[in-house]
Length: 154
Image 1 (cartoon, rainbow, N blue to C red):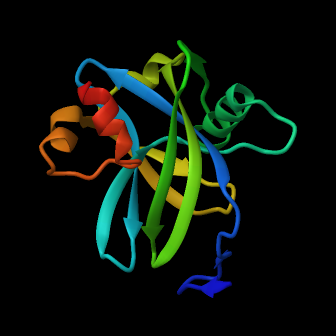
Image 2: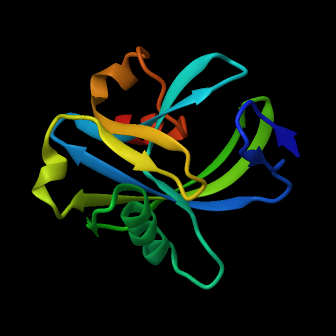
């Protein structure tokens, strides 16, 4: 286990995680959560979502995660892009299989260009927001998993 400055304990990953993410796009903007890598001193952004729990489908997991984190609902609009994601974050190696579903917010409030509080099950708080896709495409901001930009460009 790795201990960080706050009382939250981060367990070292030893298995492949299955995650679900929502590709929420409105015109040329993508709805993402801002995160920070403390070792790299670098901000990065990822679509909202989380881990699949035992016994639930990826679709069920995505609907649950968005509701838990943002207290709202989405509509899944298509089939997922499946991405294998090997990465290092906060100095720890990670390995995920990510199901990235195209989706839309049901509540029109979430179409407004503002910052939305996102609360993880651990109690950690983040900011979610609409970001112009060109900022990711030209490298000003970092979107993860990185394979999403390759997919989007094609």
